[in-house]
Image (cartoon, rainbow, N blue to C red; front, side):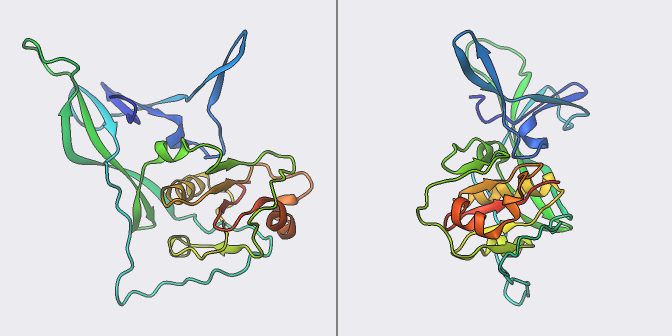
Length: 247
């Protein structure tokens, strides 16, 4: 019953999964035993303040996530220019916001006897905004739990994959319209220096069914991640979304 809980609000504090407030390239810690790795652990972040509800609030995502749809008469710039190896900070206006819905039910594991209700499941949506424009709702925690087949975190060394279904061209994504209206070839989301933009773009891309390739925070020593030919020939498959380095 608690697998979908992403935030716990009680007293004067909220306790949230670190996945919600860190770069998506960051992996969970691995717990070790004498026999080797046994499980992964996600850190908990405490923040002063609460969601304004009495008792213990266990925040869960809504079952259906909404996405922005094109409006008739609205003009959006969608170029999908071919990537030349340059980085850019194109998602500096991106932010994530938490909104509580009206859905709030008591947490209980038994139905015997009379008692006070102290804990509640509270539905909360995480929304992506581009400045003042709503982009869509995302389930960040579920997105970041994807296996390596869909979420590929690249290490500092040159990461060479099989030469199957590799791409001839990589297009640039410099705004949310270009990502939501993604072409059939791979794209590179240019969110250099903004972990929040990287997290939002990775989450929504996984939600849309794309494989996400996360480039490392401090790049490749030999510049292989700015080498268009290397990226095209060894790393990128048709349909991928590549998230730019953070530094």
